[in-house]
Image (cartoon, rainbow, N blue to C red; front, top):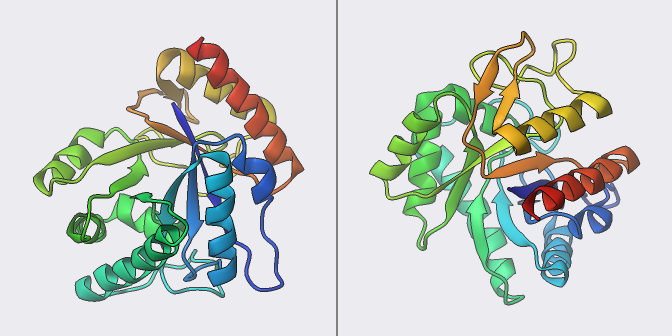
Length: 245
């Protein structure tokens, strides 16, 4: 199981996250493309950091919502949504190529990610945009009970997928993430590690109401926003390494 983390989210004089501490313990870096966070210099430096540590890089595109950190939905037309995805993907892809790095996948951010999982039309547009890019890229989306449907949708477009789970988020009975507005949506340290151990050992996650969910998971999302998050990444990395031995 791979570890992925949202990185490159600083902007100008504003610093977000602890990228240098997280990068050495992950496999995949989801790099902000400037629409919700990140700027050209941050993008370039984050790519260089990923190269230094041998980390796979992915585009982390969002709705054009810098003020709201990409957490507000936008009513974009089909053409507009696909174009804003291509714009962001091409930006990070070009900057990566300039450092002899290759962009490997796309993971939408925030509201765009949530809309992709909840709305068939949005997901179709995201899939079409990634599939229509001038070279093959994978799409990362949430592993839910509907993973086979999503796999079929991708197969019809010749698109390869990464299915991801979240280390520190509680789940609803249908396999979707519990809304952050609900109590208990973000797991404490103890429950987070218990969830990771269960996923590694059994390939399952237990929902907030006790339903055991069998999920197809290729990558686990972790967060390095603070010292506690970095410490958690270290522990999760150790659990995965131990299980693979």
